[in-house]
Length: 211
Image 1 (cartoon, rainbow, N blue to C red):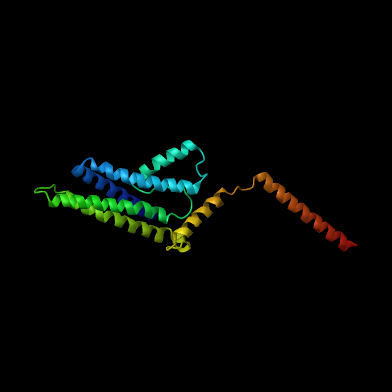
Image 2 (image 1 turned 90 degrees about the horizontal axis):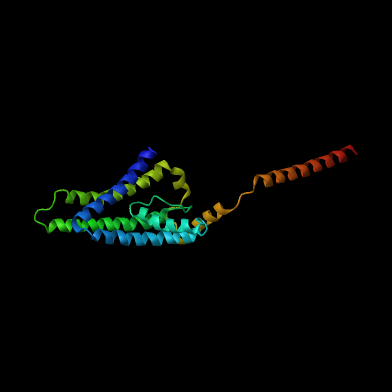
């Protein structure tokens, strides 16, 4: 059930996005690159801000540059890559709100084109309606996925979390993951030292009892 909900959610998001691009490109051709360029710049700013929060999450400069360039390209279609640990509701909102606004704008321009053309293609109106409806339907499937397929997340997460607390939660998660764990040798030495102290204390008590 979880897999079906996840596939449905992603399919509706990506499908509505691709359909919006195809319909808009068929009517306004090169203006599609303007829409994609604006969205890419917005997503680039988002990824750059995430990398500033992560700081040392991607230490290699080459990997950081590649991530900053490639990830916004993925975010043109869906928010499906997130290397930043912690809560992600604001990241989804920052990606999905501009995406849906762009879909509505492209669909509205498509419907305007239909209203001003004497014999438009038959698929334009149903296609634009599907674009407008599919995206919020995908968000509803996403919410249902987290409610019924990931109930532990919904019970432990505050829905109305202010941005400052959200940011602090992300930073806490990053610092917690960065905290180095003790090496096996150190653990064994600690255990041996503790056992030696317990043994010495027990032997002292035994000798006192015999005396």
